[in-house]
Length: 288
Image (cartoon, rainbow, N blue to C red; front, top):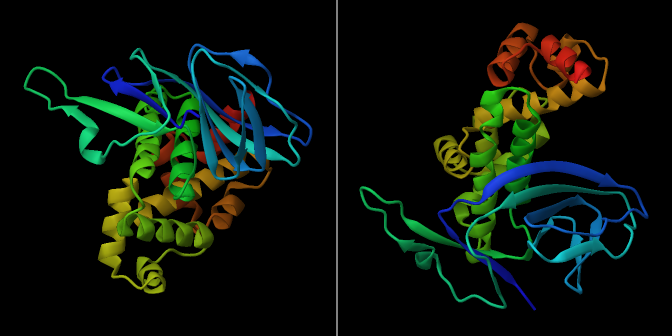
């Protein structure tokens, strides 16, 4: 049984396309053979996939890498509504399929960089695995989809580096148990996403997590690249974008619904992140 997929870097694996699909009960994936990777992550429900005569059920919070050159298809319809993210990517490096791996962290770096040549690395990714830090991975997947669906060139150019974060997250979980700082960051994310409609105070969050505010802020920055306030603001803007597209609520009501009481500040913050005002964003999405 193949348990790992491995390839060298450089060349970097190249992001191609991504999306999020919803299958109603009874629906299943169609049959095809790709010349590229197809990564599937299930947010809700379960997908039943066969690849090269090997059957897999991808449950909620699990992922599967489908390998270039091998036929894959859904062998059974979904029992419940199933939501999943898919990513197509490719690499020009030779691909190895391994039954097991004894690699450790130190062996990821195959060759140190010089002043003229890049370092060489080796990815060894579990083919199928349950994600330990779901909120962290799902947040990166959301960022990737928003960048990919954007009409703004400066946002689209972020696709590749965000995609690299997806692979790095999976690679880290494939080798080690989560660190204590990652666990704290996960708890902070859960707190923010639960309380985003309220006024955000890092002191209150830190008190609930039983850590000093400075420490929580530091591990959030290390793990997600964002401070707690930045994460809260991005999450609020994400929720606001959904409301702008899918409801007829006025901007003031949306601002209040996502936890920002002052509409002027909300509009200014929205334009900072999206490059357009909330009203312009709504009109743009309607035209598209």
